[in-house]
Image 1 (cartoon, rainbow, N blue to C red):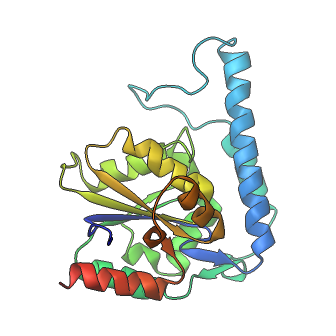
Image 2: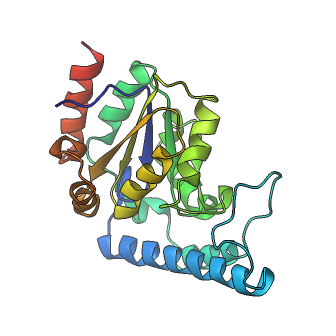
Amino acid sequence: MSLPAPTIVIFDMDGTTVRHLNPRLLGVMEFLDDAVFKISRLWNWIFNRKGQGPLVLEKPTEPVKPPKSIIVHRAIHKLRRKPVELLVEPCPGIYSVLSFLKSHKIPMALVSNGLGKGYGDDIVQKFGLDEYFPVTIFREDIRKSKPNPEPILLALAHIKDPLSPDDVIWYIGDRHKDVVAVQNAEKVLPCKIVPLAYGINAAVAVVEKGYGPNHILMTYQDLRDMLGELLDS
């Protein structure tokens, strides 16, 4: 059974749009990012709200200040002290997919749990990704990171508001939390959202969550061929 043709496509960044030249670094960075974010949220719940109220806050009614944990994330990224081109490279075949989607006027967004300043923004500029991603969501833009759906929902709010029931969103990620984030977003969206796994970690999650094998990407050439069949027809 083929997937429905997308009207919007959202990409994760690390491990999905770009890959680390040292794969171990990606794992360490994601572990530290997730750990610091969870600890800071618990700290705020215990000491700022005195253990009262839900651990996960509702959407604010007015702008909020960036969490103090941002300082820690900046410190983590400063440890590398290397230009981004010495750390990451575009995933093979990604430009073919991005160019094809752009030629068909499919809106795209890039979302990441990582920092924009000093890292994500540099990647977008260095590799010309701003040509394809007018919308980028990084750690500074959110209060709750994936697997919370906030990054996805915020990206969609910038792309199209309101969404229609006919919209179909594809979300492409390489981690278990990306698949869970899609499931969480599905609970509040008025339209269909489809997870696509690029990488083993996300592929395992896709199988665990009951999605079919057509939700797993082996290469971006496979995705390009799939899109060609759906959009060119």
